[in-house]
Amino acid sequence: MSTAQTILVFNSTGQQGHATVQALSDLGKFKILAVTRDPSSESAKNLVNIPHVHVVKGEVGVHEHFFDQPIHGVFFVQMGFDIEAALKDIKSLLDISEKKGVRHVVFSGTDQCGHRDIGIGHPFLDAKKDVEDLLQGRKFDWTVLRPVGFMENFYKAPYKAQVTTTWLQSNHYKMISVVDIGRIAARVFAQPTEWTGKALNVAGDSLTPGEIVEVWKEVTGELLDDKEPPQFPPGFDSAMAFFTKNEFEASVEWTEQNFPGVMDLKTWLKSSNFAKA
Ligand SMILES: NC(=O)c1ccc[n+]([C@@H]2O[C@H](COP(=O)([O-])OP(=O)(O)OC[C@H]3O[C@@H](n4cnc5c(N)ncnc54)[C@H](OP(=O)(O)O)[C@@H]3O)[C@@H](O)[C@H]2O)c1
Image (tube, rainbow, N blue to C red):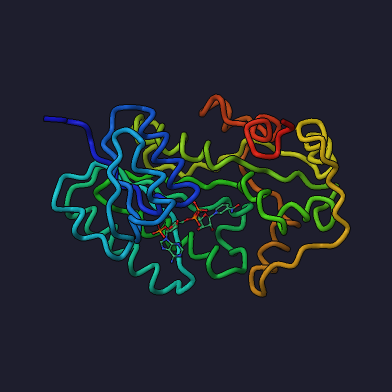
């Protein structure tokens, strides 16, 4: 009989969830329950052949049935724009995790550019502070990841167009690949004592818009030269304006020291679909 500890990964078909499932699997020491609302979806099918992974139906809020068996660790991100409902579901997940003896909960929130107490001014993003607060004083160990902007955002046109239109030449824009967030989450589960009770602001690179253009040209051959500022959906545009003005807190040096191998933009681009053939 296998004695591998079980990690319950919510949002497992998403960017961070999938990367966390993959990185946990690579460690070879955990059984992974990859949670999705729809096990028949294409993104769920992409998980089924990963070793040590079992795709299971559920979501934060529909989670009680997972705790009929011993669960060692839980990973989740915050989803859903009904903030009150999302926080209620997250609290319920944390309550049952505590009651059923889960050892370690990892929540991936966001770097808040030093505005954790005053708020970013966007309800969905500011609710991550409430989630962090819900972790306090529990019987389980917890770790919060606070990633900066995802490098994978560049796959979405509106994000890429910011570099040469709205982003300020005087600012450094910090970024991290979701692949590294997954690796960091897996390391946190594997070495819990080092990371228990801590919030980890993590970044893989920090570049001015001019530096991003240079790296982009070198690796992809493409010159970033958008002239029209991108349109973000109403409500979200104010958050994007916030992140244009305010630099993330995370230190690339600290991240590299503690999680060696974290990718800078050049390394990530070389591994991405943007790289020159
Ligand atoms: N983009 C950035 O630069 C950035 C930076 C820092 C933090 N963040 C935070 O990262 C979080 C998103 O993480 P992610 O990009 O890894 O997630 P994602 O790729 O958007 O996927 C999340 C997964 O959660 C599941 N899900 C459960 N409830 C959902 C709901 N109500 N709406 C949509 N999907 C739902 C979906 O899987 P099923 O359908 O299979 O159940 C989905 O695949 C957000 O909280 C965001 O604020 C983003």
